[in-house]
Amino acid sequence: MAAACKQGERKAQKALFEALSPKMMAVCLRYMGNREDAEDVLQEAFIILFTKLDSYQGAGSFEGWARRIFVNTALMHLRRTDALGLSDDIEEARSLFTQEATPVQKMGYRDLMRMISALPADARTVFNMYVVEGYSHKEIAKELGCTEATSRSKLQRARIRLQEMIRENK
Image (cartoon, rainbow, N blue to C red; front, side, top):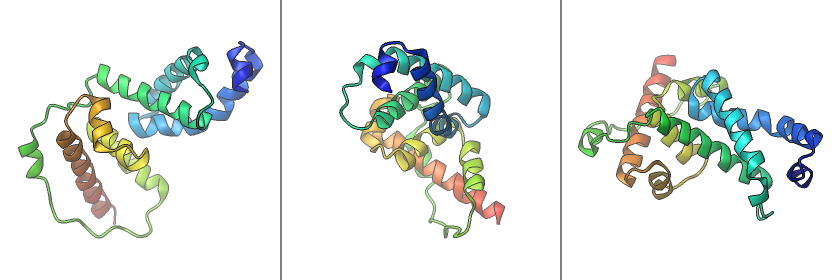
């Protein structure tokens, strides 16, 4: 399908769009926090994907390659809107460290996704990159143009806020 898309076949492009849209929309929603922004990022990322198809060399899965495009597009959007606010002081973040709460065993996926979407954009982005996508703090720092310490503090803030929301939701 990717080869046909590279040659500009519209039916193949439509099939690729239909195959990837649901999964990539979920990625976009995790980063953007609302459907409208996620749809904008989805469209923008598909444009990038179709224009960069020639750069896919076949190493690794196509879906993994595409996912990176969608994550990077979401990050670019967040940077453009300055939603990440990555200039927080690490000392301020240290004051937020608390003892870890007991996890809630039977929380629904939709409830958890709603809570993650409610996080501030900067914390949500780092949380998604670290927990969901598996980036290291070093990789997150490089992608977002911040320090590893800032990445760690944003992750900790996200975890603390999620714990608070889980406690409130009991």
